Length: 235
Image (cartoon, rainbow, N blue to C red; front, side, top):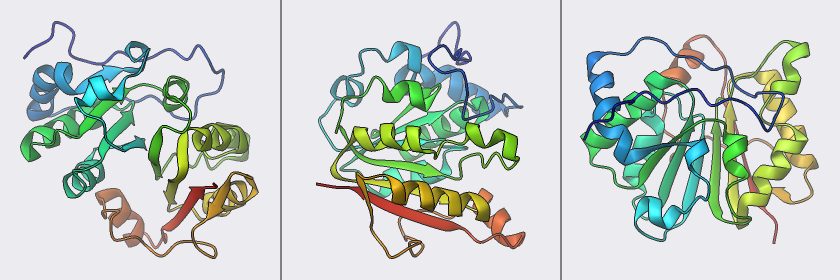
């Protein structure tokens, strides 16, 4: 299948004045361009086209739903989805080469339980019913290290409350970062949310189900330890 406009357009921020991400384009390989042209109509949608959001229509079945916020190049998403065929994975990303690469991985691995949403995850949350998600993954979000930019961080009280409200009772919010100060801020924010409970006494041991990506390997080589935080929505 082909599309006359295969490249996902940037979604303007109309609902929120402050973005938690920095839109990027970047170069794409010929393979990625072909994946975007041929596979986007089947596996992708823009957040502006997701109203109303119907996962049964999108995936063709009713199954527990995992939202991946910031799927990057898609390697981890594809690997987790391949090992977890009984759940559906909705990857939310704004980086066009990453979207294209995940589309290619979906094709190469014959994954029918992955779809991609281009746009702002916070806007997508507003389209999801309350208590509709089995899990939300926030792996290596932008740490916005400068103090004046901390307001742009994804893991902050108002955003966490929205994330938690979309989780089913017992559902999982799993965050990971290689930025030590952000890890401490994440933990304090998640601990303070009255509707979440930490699955561990502090940081979680590295879970086997979260694949080691190229990004994480670079962090390890640079001496930056990765912190995992796993919380569940209270009953």
